Image (cartoon, rainbow, N blue to C red; front, side):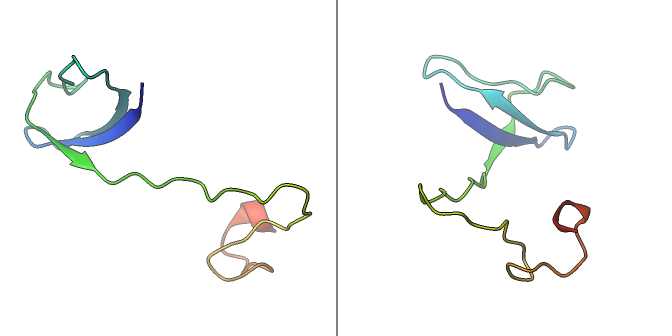
Length: 70
């Protein structure tokens, strides 16, 4: 079952949920079915066997903006 991201047109809540082909998702906040599917970002695959440093938007050395890369 794939995970999809949605934005509710009725209340504006953004959420992710598992969706089966036979199911129609509903907003967990207001139970509206008036949803807009959002684009989801996926993680870039790591090439096996290579040691790599985490990349950031500023490049492999980071820019100090994200505490995860400091």
